[in-house]
Structures are given as C-alpha cells and as structure tokens.
Amino acid sequence: MGRTTASEGERERNGIGTNPHSGRRETEAERADRQWGELLQELRVAQTGVQILFGFLLAVVFQPRFAELSTVDRNIYVVTVMLGSATAASLIGPVSYHRLLTGRRMKPQTVTWASRLTKLGLGLLFCTMCSTLLLILRVALHNVVALWLVGVMALWFAVCWFVFPLWAIARDNGKRETAEPSSGTEDPGHRG
Image (cartoon, rainbow, N blue to C red; front, side, top):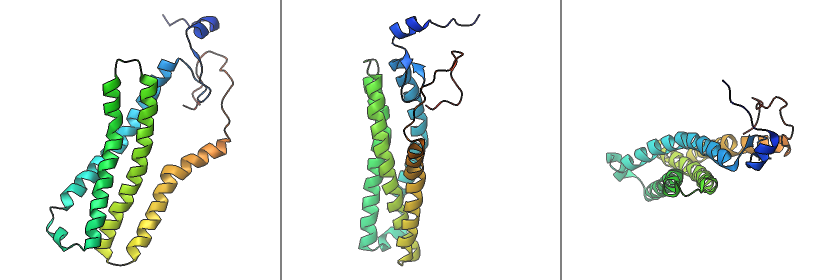
C-alpha cells in the first residue's frame, strides 16, 4: 500500500509549508536534513582535493631541491602551507560543528554555519591553489611568465567557482517558483 498524503490543513498545522527559495513542501527539519546531505556531498569533493594538495605541500619541504629555493620562493611556500592549513580547517570544520551539536535540535543553525565555513573554505582554497601554482611555476620557469600563467588560472578558477554561479543567479532575476504542482508530487525540474 502507498502512503496517504496529509490534507492541506494537516500539513500546515504540522509546519509543512512551501519553501520560498526552492518551492519544495517540507518542514524546517526536513529542509535542514536535505541541505545537510547536499552540503556533505559538496564537502566530500572539496575535502579530497584539499587533502591531496596539503599532503603534497607538506612533502615539498623534505625534497632535496627545497634547500635551493630563493627567499621569495620559501616565503611563498610558507604562505601556501598556511593557506592550505586554513583551507583544511574551514572545510573539515563543518564535520566537527555537526558532531558537537548533534542531538541538540540545532540542525538548521548547524547547516547555516557549516555552509558559511564551506564558503570560506572555498575562498581559501582559491587562494591556496593560486599560491601553489605560483610556487610551482616560479620554480619551473624562473621568469615573469609564471605570474601571467597564475593570473590566467586564477581568472579561470574565479569564473568556474564564482562567476558562473553568480551569473546563473542574476540570469534567474530572483524569480522563485511559486506554483504548486497539481498532483501533490514534486516537479522533477524543481530547484533545490
């Protein structure tokens, strides 16, 4: 047998309303659970990249060629390692935040703060990637071309990570789905 759906009155009494941002009919707790799951998937991708990059950075200092780096390159390395550390902290922070607040009925607040930490982590990851590229290309090329290449890649990162999503928001012109699906099932083309 299928589940019976609650009447409109029951749904409203139980706090189930249409989310003005996604058009979904869900309680605040359901929304927080869904958003937490989505955030975890995003964090898995970012954390893997950060862990690989950070491991590489930590290993560099133990390479024989590290002693040959100029003072400028050593300073870039130190900045890069510090940025990598800050990035790892920001992108792993949501896991700790969730673990410490589990069972306290604070899921919506946890999602909000974890999302903020993730955005900060992505900004720091942008800086870490650019700094890492600068260090590698300075060592590899020994000339000003390294700066130009890093600039081009920084622009590409910014476009992929920030400009495209902001462009999509602007293109949407702030329109929100307000129409309810007539069948009681959610439209598969919804935004979440």
